[in-house]
Structures are given as C-alpha cells and as structure tokens.
Length: 262
Image (cartoon, rainbow, N blue to C red; front, top):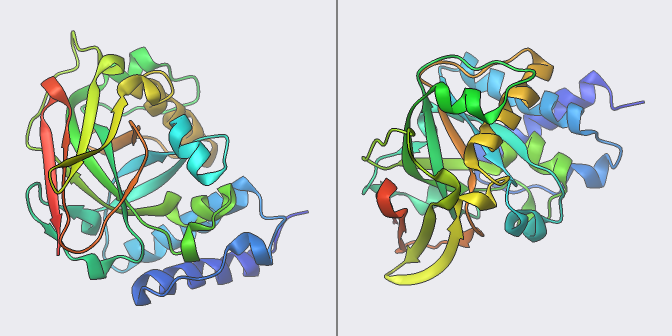
C-alpha cells in the first residue's frame, strides 16, 4: 500500500516551494520511508505539470545515476530520469548566478539531440543512434532541494532527478562513425583538472542510457520527441562549485563546453 494522492500532492508542493525559495528540505523518505519509485515519479510529474501550467516548456530529459561513480556517491543502484525545462538552459561560455541554486555540482555529459521520436518499450541503443541528429558536449548542473544531498533513490526521483541547469556546447557532431563509449572527458575547474571519465561509464554506452530512458518513460505513456535534448548521464563524478568558479569540460573530438558561476 502506497502513500495517498493527497500526500503526493503535498510533497510536490513542498518540493516546488523549496526550489522557488531556495530553501532545502528534509528527505521525503524520512517522513514516508515507504515511498516507492513509481510514486516518486508521479510526484516529479506533478511538479513538472505545475511549472508547465505557469508557462514553462519541456525541452528534453536527463538521465542520472548512470555511472558507478555517481551511484556510489549517492548510495543507489539504478539510474533515474528527470525533465529539462526551457528555463534551465544556460548559454555556453556564459554565466550562471550561483544564487539561483541551493547546492550545485557540475557533471560532464554527452547530450543527444533527436531528429525522430523514440518511444518504448523495447528500444535498443541502435534505434537511438539512428534517431539522433547530433551529439553535443554538455555540462549538467545538478542541484538538490534535499538538505545536504541526503537523498535516497525516491528522494532524487521526486526532486526531478536532482536537476538544476544545463549548458550545451556549440559543436554539433554526427554520431555516424563515432565511438561514443570511447570518448574521454576531462572536467576542469579554474584551470585545474578535477574529474576524468569515459563514455563507457554511462551504462557501457551513452546511447544505451537513452534507450533505457525511452523504455522507462513508456511506463508513464511518455516518449522522447524529435528536437528534444537528452542528457545521457555523467561520465564521471560530480564536482561541487562555488561563486567565482569557471568550469570547462573537454570531450576531445566532440568539443568543449564551459560556464562561469557568479
């Protein structure tokens, strides 16, 4: 027996206002230890639907917790996903106001831009590659409305998979002939190397993570749409940032992407 519909709505409201006010809350699972993964996604959708009703637009999806490094960091054993809204995107080489966020960390990721719809179940990575227009070097700025990042899986899922903001690089690269699993990424903060990772860290291949996402979304009758951006998951651990930090990720032949925190 799960939590009630009224409890889901109340938790969605709590998460919404925690983000608006930038005031972290205690873990949802402290109050509701029985909170299931499905219920957490239902809470996530309630928050997204509220934002859309206020004028926000869904522009893509993000996959989280795809690498062992990130799973170890947060003590979970499976990926999750969240929604990307138009107001979450920052310009490459631009500035993100640190005060917009609560406790941000940055990840280097490969973003997929789709030219065709992808809808599960039964999606394989080959279908994802065929439906991909471009891959793009990206930074995801993850954030948590849960105090001190003390999250369990249901907490981060309800909290839109700990989404914050994202930055897409200016390079657009075709996937044909590209070894995305072999892509090496180096994350720099203020000119110092802080994280290194490879594409294979993302469920063995970033496109496999996107296929996982398409199949997971199918449980809620949602598909990936042409033109959407999909952040496929971090190639390495997340790096905590402060005001004044300049972060850049170098993906070799896929290009670079950077942003500054003010």
